[in-house]
Amino acid sequence: MAATETIPASTAASATATATAAALGEVEDEGLLASLFRDRFPEAQWRERPDVGRYLRELSGSGLDRLRREPERLAEERAQLLQQTRDLAFANYKTFIRGAECTERIHRLFGDVEESLGRLLDRLPSFQQSCRNFVKEAEEISSNRQMNTLTLNRHTEILEILEIPQLMDTCVRNSYYEEALELAAYVHRLERKYSSIPVIQSIVNEVRQSMQLMLSQLIQQLRTNIQLPACLRVIGFLRQMDIFTEAELRVKFLQARDAWLRSILTAIPNDDPYFHITKTIEACRVHLFDIITQYRAIFSDEDPLLPPAVGEHTVNESAIFHGWVLQKISQFLQVLEADLNRGIGSRLDSLLGQCMYFGLSFSRVGADFRGQLAPVFQRVAISTFQKAIQEAVEKFQDEMNSYTFISAPAILGSSNLPAPIPVTQPGTLQPPMVLLDFPPLACFLNNILVAFNDLRLCCPVALAPDVTGALEDALAKVSTFFSNGQPDLCNKPAHETVVPADLGLV
Image (tube, one colour):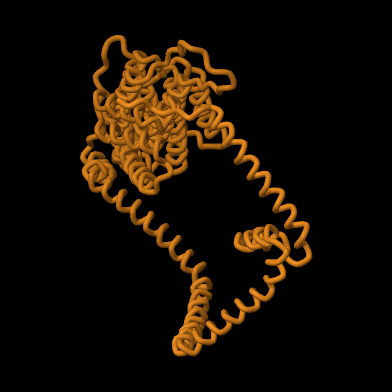
């Protein structure tokens, strides 16, 4: 390979010095020109036009003779240029005319273009707004398309959600309560996540309506002859619905069962008091005992393990049940007393036995009310006895007012007299036979004995003072009747006062 030639360092230094000197010379010439032609040529003009600067530098380097001839040369050159221009104009005048026409046409076209551009600029804002609207609508259409695509992809899941109200209604009407509660819990979760979506709100409202229907059906089941397992299921569903508190649930249960019990008691015929009260006793004893058993199996009356929260109102839940039982017993005692006052004849002892058995059966659940039966039967017994005694006194007075020697046989043969005297048994008490000589008094005695026989069927010991007082009042009235100027019957002939032998004393 050929060796590379190198430039000596002295040569490079001399070239650099020459360039620097030339640059400095140009700067000095420009400064000189600026000072010489300041008034004739502005500095900006010849600086912008390089040919002017070169010409001025050329003049500054010329001799005196050339400078003297320079104006003549410039005049000749100017005349030549003017002549060349005239010749060019004459030779190419058509071109100039055509150029002028083109220029005019171009000017008009530029005017039209400017006018069109003005109109375009005027319309650009509305066009820009239309473009924005188009972009916005395009975005909405794109978003809707994406939503439609997503909806199409999730069609099965969305359809299942939309069919929840219909499925819920079907489950409730077919008594599929467990499935209905699962659907309700799922809808509740949807509501917490997507409560702002109108479709979800509509589904939630329809499901709530189905829940109300389910609540009505469950409470209606409690108003029927439902057994304990079914009661447990119904109360379990009501607790899962979480609509009532524990106290409210107890009240709802007792109200529903009480409505069913009242419907049974209302269906009992009320024509015969004895039939009505016996059927009422039987219905209350059986069904009320079942209700109490169901309640104690479902609800617990034990004290809660945890104390109530601060500020929370505590409810004595056991008092709800006890109050309801006391109310039912009070209502039964009212019905019992009302039917007894209507009159049940001589079957008071049988009714007392049924009521005592009723109270005894309730002692197994801590609701023995036999102590409250005694005052009721005492009042009825003494009222019946007093009424019988009063009727005996009134009948005696009526017979005494119409008793004469002629009417005595009629009285003795009347149907109001008791049956013939039975054969006397050893150790039994019999009324004196001398009363047969005075038929009104014998009939009075028979009525008194009938009242005692009726009282013997149900005769509490506590009635002894009242019975004694009623009997004393009756005897006092009879004695008063004799002491008020009645004729002395002892002076009548014996054949007129003899009573037939068939007059019986009980």
